[in-house]
Image 1 (cartoon, rainbow, N blue to C red):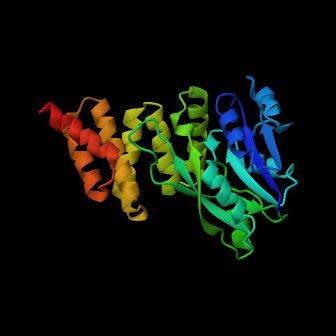
Image 2: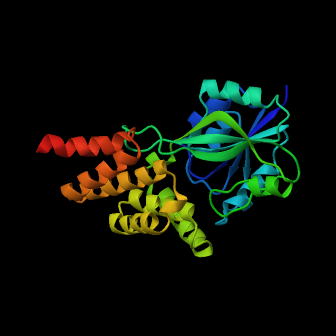
Length: 283
């Protein structure tokens, strides 16, 4: 059976880390935690769970940090996870089966769990998280870094898989994490001003910070100038977040109208349906 190194990059993750570590205990031959300056019990928690802990000073570039983390791995395969993620038992089985295939890397679905209990995931992000530990594979991009560029240089593509990874980071109420993500997204937007993905996630970061005016402006720009780059599902979600902004700002007419537009694009959009029903019941 091929061996697996589970790798994670952390700072002050004592709340999330135990769940993630427990979720991979049955499939990991080694768990490597790279700490970037925790001041809470993150390091102690990691060691208590049997992880190997290394330390490096943080720089504002996730790809640099991921590559340092990779350098500590010794397994045949690497599963790269964040502390606020989780592997369910059924997905652990899928990972073990994938490692027995001849493929070089696998794309996984990151199921973003949001603060709204009505939504289990907002358009899953596809990310290459499971890959063979081979020398040419390196991370690039400052934030939401990926090894895909390394694969493309070798004329390789990650294989599609049905592996799902639950991500709970958007439920985090810690302002430090949110401000860090916002800062990095702003830096990335300066480098890639036309990148829809970066702009969308900056708008989402602003939304979670309750900076509704700036968030709404970013969402407006995306829908008006970059909508051709977005699938219907993503447009529906953006419209739903705009509707929620209007609801929170006590603008019922705008909230209901935007929610209706969102449902027309995606009839399984439960949050948009909730917003619409909320105002129908008040009539």
